[in-house]
Image (cartoon, rainbow, N blue to C red; front, side, top):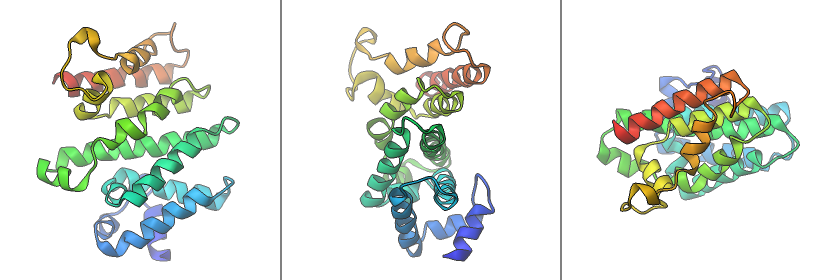
Length: 219
């Protein structure tokens, strides 16, 4: 797999078109499984494990469907994100975890925009984000690290309308505005002002996230 690793890493935050096409082919299934397994089993953040996580982040953003197409791989990805985000004494690991989630959510949104509804239903588990990642993001927006908070609010700003239906109504598609759960929205709104958020970068990300939420929910 050395040629694949080089091709992905050379792409920085994205991957090349040939590699993206390869990831959609069944011949890449083993590679994704091995990468997820190796990323999950690393006990420390060595240069090798960091490289694997950065590679996984690139794949999650450019080819999110490669993560969700097999239940085992999706479960492994969830565990990796949860484990990284729960490390209390290591900001760098928490940041890597939130970046993984952000990459997947941003990549999924881009994928949905460029695909038809039929392909989306066939290739993506749209409900996976609210149930798997939003509780991690809600914790991350209270993190001591401004970088972690920025990634978290950016992720909320890239959620789909289907995600907000679940988050606002606890999975119920029927309900009055007064019965909706505004916890996530209120948290992000509070970060738009100096009184609620001391970091200018986080405030800017929060304001942009509010715009994104309004666009998908009202637009």
